[in-house]
Length: 211
Image 1 (cartoon, rainbow, N blue to C red):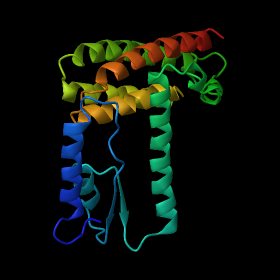
Image 2: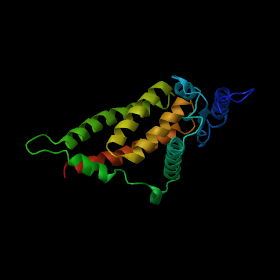
Image 3: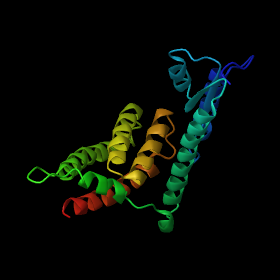
Image 4: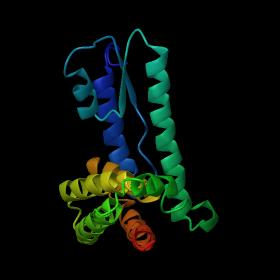
């Protein structure tokens, strides 16, 4: 609650994030998912909450539709965490498919006779960009270049999501989050997982391109 007496939600979140930074840097732990609740609905309130380190935002009185949406986003984050933990423990059976074939099918419907294949163009652009991002990410992890890692991971997350590479997008999202909070503990492991998953995505995309 942002308006708590004595210690408000903003300062509470900042203290939680500071404690996490101290305790989670050498572990595989994940940051708490914090949802702001505030009576304000002014311009800039959401940004203030996010800058304080919160993950999402609700205004009072709570609208049930908005509450459901916020909880769904939080639930999606937990599913992502489960995937990352399974991958880090070597659980092959828990690994999700590298590509969502429904996304591929939708993009394939954009083809028009006598025109360049848009799916092939999208795949070429993604591979060219992701090759560079993954390579730069591997170089930035040992030096703990957090701003560079946040930028690289954010871009990879978005482009992977657009092509239905959900596990890769999930890993990039976690690396982005850890880099944003300055927590190096899991970065090396996430970097390896991203490189391995990207190799699978790249091979799957090139196979789709040649279909």
